[in-house]
Amino acid sequence: MGDGMNIARLKPWDEGCPSINGPDICGASAGKPFFYAVPATGQRPMEFEAEGLPEGLSIKASSGYIEGSALKEGEFDILLRAKNVHGKAEREFRVSIGRGPALTPPMGWNSWNAWRMWVDDSKIRQAADALTGKGLAARGYTFVNIDSCWQGPRGGRLNSIQPNSKFPDMKSLSDYVHSRGLKIGIYSSPWTAPFGCHKGDPSRYWGGPDLIGCSSGDPDPDYPFKAGQGMYIGINKHEACDVAQWVEWEMDYLKYDWTPNDPVSLERMGRLLKESPRDFIMSICLEARIENAVAFKRWAHMWRGIPDTRDNWPSVVKNAFLSDDWFNEDWRPYSGPGGWHDLDMLALGPQFETKDKSRPNRLTKNEQVACMTAWALYPSPLLLSCDLEAVDDFEMSLFGNEEVIAINQDRLGRPACRLKEERFQPVSSGRPVRNSRVWAKELADGSFALGLFNLSDRTSEISVDLRELGIDGSLRARNAWEKRDLERTGHVFSLQVEPHGAQLVKITV
Image (tube, rainbow, N blue to C red):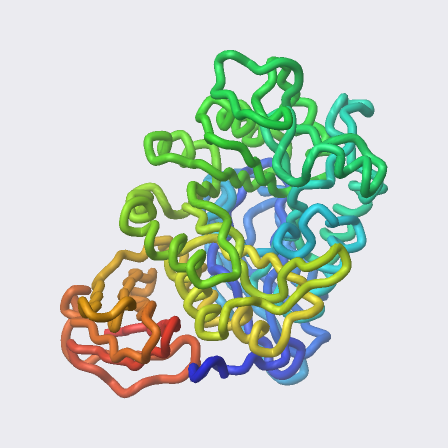
């Protein structure tokens, strides 16, 4: 499958014996609502058990939903079980109470690349249905995130941002997403007006006022000014009102979008979210800078400082690889459980074309594999952003590969390092003949994941000396994309990689 590459075809999610997927750790705060839907494939009906849950939590046998409110902090080692008519599965699982959420990179879906400003209540419900109905939720995709253009006027009982006419009942929408075993997110900005659409578009297209953010009034002189369409931090701050509203709607995630990402605005919102009665994932973009890394790690769970990733090869190369030369590698000391450097939502699968129609992805299949490999290995949050109802079999195999997801969701949370780079371009040629990278990521079980990336236009044999990982001897190698064991290898490991493609291999002593 692919442009010469071979990736394993995804099996139907609702057939056969049970398999428990997703991360093997989940974090939350004591005394706040806890919700975790055990991601499991296999024929339904299925019966779930959880042995060793902390006091205050229980599991619903028919759905695998773990709910309640943990009474005290601690590390709780759980044994999850699932069984159906074909057999049963067990998996060790840790519930960490007191460390907060995002102990592994968040996974889910965002509306922006799929529907832009045309996102509405129906499209969010459809996305929730698709995540569950296509088996992506059963493989760990959890969040359904509303990006910009849900906003209406400020008002209501809490003097908060109210939804526009495309979202008639936000609490009802939140309840629907939760009923599907998923979590829901929302978008805002500390500016008076956020990104999302041009001034006048809401009035023209859905009869609403222009978009607003969490501040209002004249520019606050204590903050950098962003010219254009009221995009600045206003003198009047409304974060407390808006957080209270999101808590009432039972939101689980906030994407907070402005530039530059100043630490004062971040802390003002981050503190309110941490002190709220619910656990929130906080994601910030789009100009996170390394000098503020300590503040980002303290108040946010995800941060991005690179441009939007588009579905074209130069954009993927720039954000995943060229930025690595001068920017991305700087974040490795700060990225790990509880806080992740974000390579942006995935520009994979069918992308926005019109308010009612998507178009095929412009990346080749090899390029989509390279993109998914880089995001999984980095590790970046895995947020799909496409028309889920239009994805094809290749894209489902790309998104749902359990072995690739497991590398991204590894509980150690160790960032990948650039192990090797090779470039060769003759003076007489305008294009590189060789351009490869090898990334290595240490995993919690003592193994290593290797990403072999071929950025050139011709097939390359990529080799790596595994002694650089501190291991030697006869080693086991498994191709994660193909889901197959390779021949045992010595200290030199080699694999052919297609043009603009990647291979992901797990090396075990």
